[in-house]
Image (tube, rainbow over all chains, first blue to last red; front, side, top):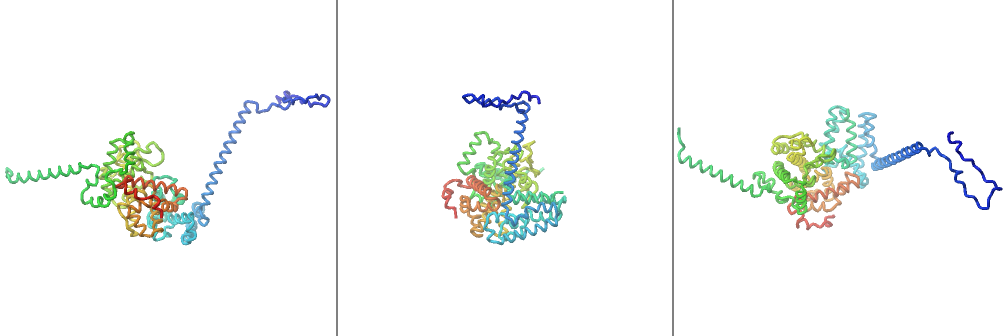
Length: 211
Length: 319
C-alpha cells in the first residue's frame, strides 16, 4: 500500500486531557486520501457517470417507445387482435395457416360491422371499416362508395399474391398494390398520413411477396 | 403555256384577301385577352369547358385579393421570375385544354402546393417535390398508370411536351430535360395528369352509383383528393350520405353553395376522417383539408372571397 504510511494516527482524547472548552474536531482525522484523488481515477469516474447517463437515457427512450407501442396496440379492439398476428402467422406457419387465420378475422369483422352497438364506438368503427376496406372488400356495404374501389384497386392483387406467395410476380403485384394504397390515402408520400391499418396491411403483403 | 384569265386571277385574289382578313380577325381576338384561355379554345370543346366552368371558375386567377397580393410579393422578392410565371401560365392553358379541366383549379392547386416554386424540395433527400409536390407514388402513377381511365393524359403529354416524356422523375442533373419534374412544362403536365386521374376516378364512382353531380364542382373534390387522398373524399361523401341520404350527397356534389358551407363547418369532415385515422390525427387533417379547400375556392372560384361567399355565415353551416 503506497499511501498506507501516510495515514494519520488516530488519537482518541482521554478524559484526563479534557480541556475546559470543547476542542474543535480535528478534521484532519477524518480526511483520508482516496483513490479518486488521482487524475486517472477522476477520469474513470467521469466515464462511469457518462455510461450511467447513456444507459439511463436509453432505458427512458426504450420505455417510452414500449409504452407508446403498447398503447397503440391497445387501441386495437381485442376481437381484431388476430390482425396483428397475421404477419407472424405467415412467417411461422405458412400461407395455409395465414388464410385460415384471415378467414377467422373476416368473420369477426363481419360480425362487428353488423353489430350496431359496436359501430357506435369510433375506434371500433374505424378499425372494422378499415379492415373491411383493405382485407375484405366484399364485406363493405353496397351503398359504400369505396366498395368497388377496394376490389379493383388492390383486392384482386392481394388474392393473386396469396395464390403465389414469394414468387417474382407476387413482388410486382405487391408494388402495384402498395402504390394504389398510398395514392388512395397519402398522395404526398407522407408516412404519418398513412393510416395504421393501411401501414400494417402493406407490411403483411410485403412479407407475403418477399422472395 | 397558258396564262390564267383575268377572271381566275380576280377569284384567287378575292380568296387570298378573305383568308388574310379571317387570319387578322382571329389573331386580334386571341391577342385581345391572352389570359382568358377559354376563348382560345375551338368552339366544339368550348361547349365542354366554357359551359359550366365559366360560370363557376375565374378566368383571371388568383381570384381573391389576398392571393393576388401574395403573388405580387413573390414576384417582388424574386421568388417567382416573370419568365417562369409566364411558362407556368401558358402550360396550364395547354394542359387544361387537352384535359378539359378548369385552368384556374390547376394553377391554384400548384400555387397552394408550392407557391409556384418549381424547384421546391430540390435539395431535400425526402419529401414532396416541385410544383405539384410529387411523391414516389405520384411518379409511380404517372409513369405506370397515366392511361388508367382514358387516353387523354397520354394525348395531352404528347401535345404539350411534344413527346411521351415518361419515365418522369425528380432528375436533378438536367432540370430542362423533358423527363425531369423540375422542368416546368413537365411538372405542369404531370400535375395535371395526376389531378385528372383523381377526377376521373371520383367521376366513375359516382356514375356507377348513379349519383348526380356537377362536373365543374367535382374538380374541387378532385383537388381535395389530390391533397389528402381519394379515401378522405370518399369517406366525406359516405358520411354525408349517412347523415343526409343520397339526395343530400347529390346536393353536396351539385350545389356549390352547399359544398362551400360543408367545409365552413368541421363536424362532417372530422367524423369522416376519424373513420380513417385516430382522433388526434383525424382532427388535424380535417383542419388542413378544410383550409386547403377554402384557399382553393378563394383562388379559383369566380368571386373568390368576394360578396357571394361572405353571405355564408361560418356558424350557420353546422347542422
